[in-house]
Image (cartoon, rainbow, N blue to C red; front, side, top):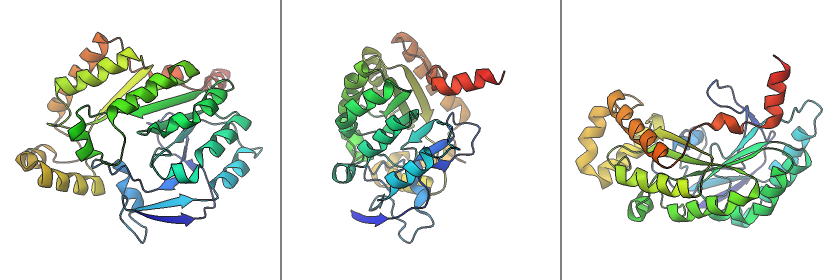
Amino acid sequence: MVIEEIKIKKALNRLHSNFLPYKYDLNIYRGCSHRCQYCYALYSHRYLENADFFEKVYVKTNIVEELEKELSSKRWKREWINLGGVTDSYQAIERQYKIMPKILELMIKYKTPITISTKSDLILRDMDLLEKLAKVTTVNVAVTITIWDEKLRQLMEPGAVSSERRMEVLRQLKAKGINLGLHLMPIVPYLTDTSENLENILREAGEVPVDYVIAGMLNLRSETRKNFLRFIQENFPQLEDKYFREYKGAYWEKEKRREVYFLVHRLMKKYGLNSDYERFRPKEIIREQLSLL
């Protein structure tokens, strides 16, 4: 893997979406070593000189300084920030650069609510900082687990830690005052949509227990579609015709999606889980919304 250090002019990325609950995204790296074959972020390298998302990771070496400028501004309203929406903040390179502790210290200093999405157990290194932040504002940590079979997981997510280890992350964070989520996505047709796989994951999540579960089926667009279908052709050629026939566009056939979501809903109910992420919106934002009523 190639590492390139870069300088940035702006740390926070303003999001313009009616579907996301937060308005800002923060990514300390570009590119990711997890090598997930279904990765939705492959598009982010489209306009760079090097288009290989998995083989070249860019490190934003001045992101801490730029972030403090933005958080200390009088214009900053302590908005909710999503960390790791494009690339995992706790991917392997973070062991070397140790940027996240400095980011979390700034969040504590400016009492800024955050959500972290990760597939890494490196987040446990920063448990004390996350606990400290949770005492002054809202902290949500969502761990993505979608494949329980380790052999299949290694094939589809070769650079990430095991799903069992990710579940252990949730267990260890449980007592830290942090809202815990499970991202059961993407659910991959004919590979991870089996009742056995989904029940294994949701049973373990229910034992933690996590505060919410967000499930989603595999979507195939642009670079993600090209990469994933090539992966299927090379590793599961018996499924190639089904994918080309049933993914006419970005989404799997509606009735098939509905069947999987029904199964997920039934299993969540069985293990006492819910999908009510709205309950864990930052208190600051809820108060602001109420003041406008």
